[in-house]
Length: 372
Image 1 (tube, helix red, strand yellow):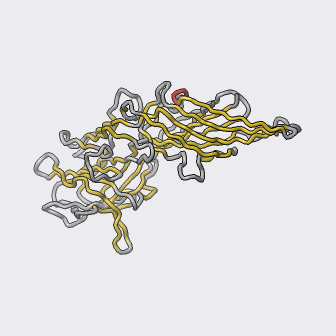
Image 2 (cartoon, rainbow, N blue to C red):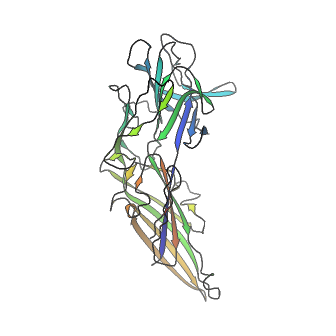
Image 3 (cartoon, rainbow, N blue to C red):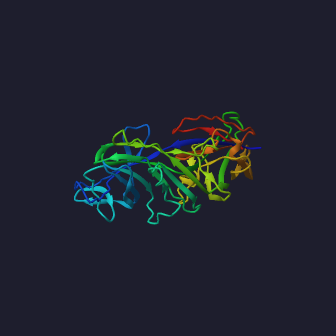
């Protein structure tokens, strides 16, 4: 039997946005509420990659004055877009202009992509009964043909003015990924046996024809909570997944599942390349519902062809189809929120042993080998 190796890597990234948003109150400092949007890397002291200027996000803000406890809605699902003034660009509300109030403070919660319909499952629901300490995605279904990147921000608390954050001026709005992401790369372990048989070289031409993933949960919910720190001054607080029945940062899922197939005849070299390289539908950056990998559930099938040229120009062609369950390989036991999982499929035309070399580092590459 031919040998197919499967290497898994996990990369985690968080998005940041320090953005310009504008707020209005009866009493105002006449200073716009601003944000500056960028991607944020947890291991870095500042944002590194700009938030796409052709995209927008939604923002909620809650006001509390200095005399009465309790927050009231101040900005209700405003769309924040990139604007240009002269030679500078900034992020601001698309419609109404908002200003900082002269008293009290504001708490901000943002999400992306923006949706005018606040009842959409793609918009996190913010609780009103616990001082906005809970957000929830409920009944969200991933579109298998056009999945989107859901983002939710840390809660920016006790904000009273635009401040410098990550090299920008505005409300600190740090976005995190709500979903997980899959990528598939392919390579050949060897192309010939010249090292073993220099006088009788056999060579192989290996082509991956199709990759299919099946039984992937595509609908679910997640509730996240935070602890308010209104006595700490202007700060940001993170959200924590409340699902305690699953030992991973995943969603609770319904029984709804989906499948995805990438079809492209890709000739392999010994260098790993994204499957479908050069095509529109690449097998990378595929957003999925975060989920634990269950036994006999989520699976992958790789269809490939090997053409063998033996000494004396004897040629043989054989097609293969190998199916494995992701749960069979514990290096990556779950597709967690904010994780970018990279699987490298390595096909060896000689051999029949499955090899693994897993390692796990949070928010860094996680290498595991899945052999078929």
